[in-house]
Amino acid sequence: MILCVNYETAHHYGDVLPAQAKLRYESIVERQQWEIYSFNKCEYDQYDTPATTYFIWRDDDQKVRAVSRINPTDRPYMLKDIWPELVTKYPMPSSMKIWESSRMCIDKNLDPITRKRIVSEIVLAHYEYCTMFGIERVLGVMPPFIFKTVWQRSGTSMETMGPIKTLEDGTRIVAAWGECTPEEYAAVIKGTGISEPVLQLHQSYVPNEKNLSKAA
Image 1 (cartoon, one colour):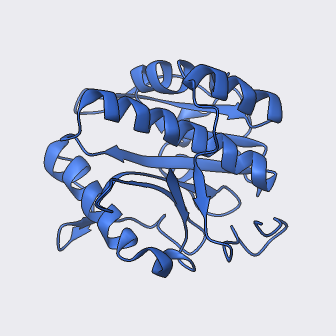
Image 2 (image 1 turned 180 degrees about the horizontal axis):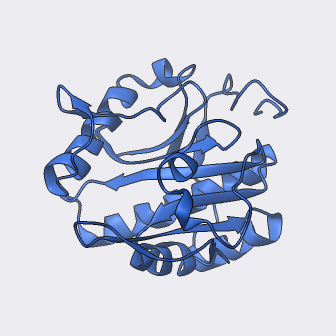
């Protein structure tokens, strides 16, 4: 199961917010050696806000072993602020109906089979969440191989939004987005082979203050 957590509900799940920040530090700062903000071995940035929803996977000992986050695009977000040149095929999104996914991290110490299952659950969580709350599209910036092996292989019809960019360190990135319809959700269920719901929401969870209905 994937915990669906925001600032208002995180206290129901112990230390999940600081734990996901520490996992991001281990994955992004220590292992990938990104030169980005951190404090006390926690990675964070300006897109960790009260509007953020986190998808968090914990093991049987309740240790956070994977995370991804999602934010609405009607406010500052990563693609628009940092890599606007990646969007050339479409207008730059700015809508409560379009959300950006980022910071997908999975504990490298997990065995390959478990990691693969978690990746599938996190992808499915995006489409389950978006379908649940009337979000029409999800987008993200990622290496092209992640676009192909994670998102497309999971059954999504995601497409690129513009050109591939090569960063100074040689990393290649591309922006991609896809529709979040019931039909697309069904395609991801088929692509991942996971037929049961993956999200766990607290009964008090509300994704934001504007236009989206409260979760049951």
